[in-house]
Image (tube, rainbow, N blue to C red; front, side):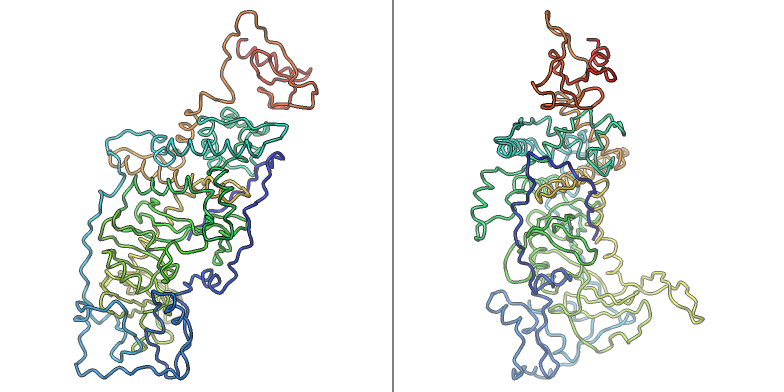
Length: 623
């Protein structure tokens, strides 16, 4: 899973606004369940009880129950004196493999170890391909816009950051800024909607043009004209420090519930978070192949929401994502706050997939791809009840997975070796690549005769390429699980994550990245439908930045030529305060600090022997 790396740029600490992380709390995740979660295991489905003395394990020991009481019993090791009931010998002759496909199976999978007839088959033994799903989406797949519409990039972006969303952000930012600056010598000045569009333009621009420090964008050394023409450095940092998504009064009320069941850990992102999820689902409908996976938004700040991904040594906030496998559109997601979205006792992996799959909105006949953290026979069978087919890698010790030993791989199986076993609608496939891979699927045939070139060691000890068998389930999995990775790539291209100590700001910048990434997918799909050539990623972001900047042009920080002053008004310099060391502002021309302004233009300008910016600026503007 690709992880969005955090930008190595640090916004200047504004002494007037404290960045102390008041919501940081002692995380209580140092439990056995958290350790299993870090290792990519589900605390419910992957917890193994002690084996009975006779070596056989029944499904009652492995399968989690729906109720909390039964679940607790299933996680406890069986007593050494527990007697496993014997299965009466069957008087019927073994059925051929082909006949097992059409048989009906109970919801609880049959124990693999309890069946003496269960064995692994190789590629030379025939399997019957199960009926393929009939794809019936609730809407036409693709953008839910007219293909002939000529929407600008800004209009597409506003489908995710709507006017109501922007109004809420501006209102709450002003409320938080005024509250935090109360009693300060420099009071908070309310920002407008246009200035918030300016701010978003610069945030996306900073993903295209990268510097290690935010102040470098306004530095005279680099002389970048765009940031200075859009917004002053002081204004940008002020908005960055006061940025707030939720109502401060609601935050205070929620903070009073800390430690109770009513405390909402995601309160500070809810106004944008919920509306963005609904917008993502409303503006696009995925094609038949979809993928679910987790995504980590990198952050070094430690609060209870943070997760640690051991495989890549990255800390951050975890999101569970459902994406279109073909184009990488982020269709649904939720932020993991330390507990399952739906508590039904079946484990985080099961509940996460069920929370992301909404068959009433999606339709039926979808093919869902996932990795071994989510895959379980119980999940796949319940997805079939929703008419959603599934495929993914699976952990051999997961509940319900066959543990037959007959005709299994030898100790040193050659590359390309294949074994398969069908349990009614579930097909389990083992394939030997560089290491052994185990798959589970509900819509594949075991082997179709496909081959792939792999590098193997020849008889003379030299490496050579050889065609080896490959199951169709492996090919499809490698092709379609990249949906979330492709989504990460679209978002991560010049991503807009800025360094911050506030967890909700980190997620805000990621939400901006999701909106920009989905906007690009909509633009690309609409362009292809119209037979036109879409923008490249870089050209797309440059155009979107310019359109966002144009939205706020009425409040541009560096205006054009000033209008003539009214009769009787002259351009005279004056000090901003009685003390020249107080209230110094940035010169409009050289960007150095100055204590003088023009009384008519209200423009801060230097007036020194070596920096006569006052007269030069007025001459340039014909004043």
